[in-house]
Image (cartoon, rainbow, N blue to C red; front, side, top):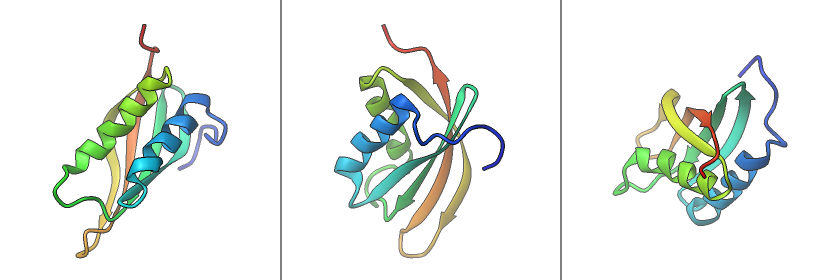
Length: 101
């Protein structure tokens, strides 16, 4: 990803990623790639649970962020790489909104 600042120290996203990775880490992990204005780019990689909906992972991180006062909403999948063994890598763009009341 080019353009925009690196998200290494982004306050709410970092905490949401840690909280997401704690229970999901054996199936999928997430990391912030970049923050650009009102968007955050998050990469998901792993084996992903075959019985869970793939988009449930993208929504789960939204709930983790909300618990930390950051409202994000998945907008679209920018990249999707999968293999025949249910391993994959997905780069998802989220819109950053206002903190919930």
